[in-house]
Image: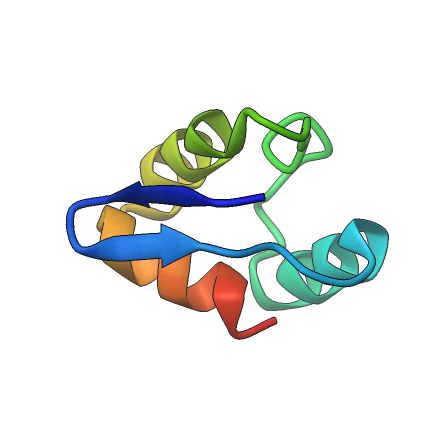
Length: 67
């Protein structure tokens, strides 16, 4: 799985439920809907997180890749 664009690439690996838990610990304002991930729709996830957290695409992508 991957999303490319704007000089960044999203590579979600491992257990998404575990990653969601880490994100919820860091960003309590995130809801299950914000963190809904469907394989092949990584752009949607990144877009929701950009809106909710007020961060750029590259920053969100790096944050997700580092989980």
